[in-house]
Picture 1 (cartoon, rainbow, N blue to C red):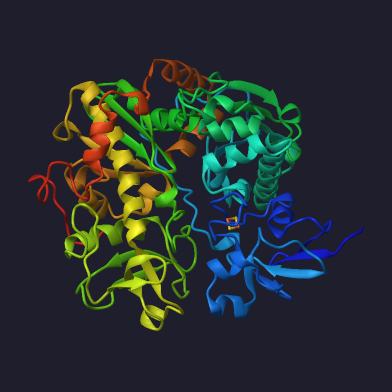
Picture 2 (picture 1 turned 60 degrees about the vertical axis):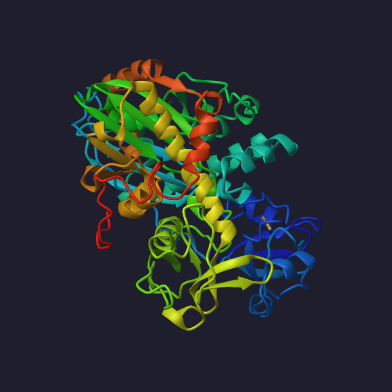
Length: 551
Ligand code: FES
């Protein structure tokens, strides 16, 4: 043991570090998820944690942190190397994160595999932000336990592109991230097994789904093809290996099935969505959307499947938004503006003071600013009592002043934040529009719109319709389906027949490379306006309902 000791609270995990190690690097090596948008370059201001004792602030600390935060000992984790024994407090323990675990499936699993009585399996949804694992009885098909965690790779960047840039620039970066995610999954599996009180050797199967980037990082595959247009994965086919070959230590006797990818960033998580929701056999027209940094969009017209991936960017995950954050304790999750001159009505996750804004509230804010006339359809903010100039950030809408709704500091939504939302929503609306064009259908033809994933589960559909994020359809046709990818992973765990369906569907889905589509540029430009395309107000059949329902 040489070098000073660094202790991470509240877990108490400790590490002896060399003098050149930043706190962010040390956290990464322990798999602790400190948020970062910039990958550790000191430009995003998201890696803030509390130091005891606090080092002298750097220029970047001064640039990103308020006087109060600096006085409290908050510093940027990527800016400080450890010179002396130090304790740091990760402000937002993982247990406070709101992770989506539930999911719904269209039909029962086809035929459980025989000869597996008494054996257990784990279905894993490896997401960019979270990892969810379900312990299943392979003999009966019933679920025994579930566990979730933040994907420890978030310490290398909240979004896929930042992580891939790290892999390509750092020596052995790919192996570093592979080990990071394997450690995380081992921790999750150990928790799962111990919560269920079963022996590791009884786990004989694992199935795993994820987008192609998560898939490649998990398997240690070359990601160069994914980092540049036309974004070709190195591997599409499914794969089965022993846990030992994969590098998982917690379940030594498991065979790991990694489901097939489709193309581009459309991975096996979308195959899970298609299979679990029965999109390959629908009678009418059904669209499924999983909104994340990349939104995966699938359209099924009488079972004929077409899909694309829309590069929405991380705005809806709270990243690149001035005071954006993940959906965890202290995040404002919903906003209602009753009077444009008065404080807004806020709903906050947990029993905490609001300290930032998560994705569902980000959509609400833009919808409410539009509804109350505080922004116009081009996204321009209008001067008003609650829209003021805030040093360096231009016009900002004041979501809360200190003291309002228990806020400890001013929480603002900036003009630039509105722009980020416009770009994100335009990407998704363009993707949905291009798929409808390709199939010769319009939003009037859509019988159901399935919203998969955490963001789709927590947003108010009426706000998403109001800003034009979703196609203009009646509100009652929008159905949150939760973690549909995880539901797919369960099917692939329990039944070889379901795996065969996945293999066939993954090859038959038509993939549209959105960025190369001839209609992309025009559609995107049109979709940057807030509201439904071509609308002075709204489509007549869209009910922009009151703000009482929460999916
Ligand atoms: S400022 Fe972006 S990771 Fe530290």
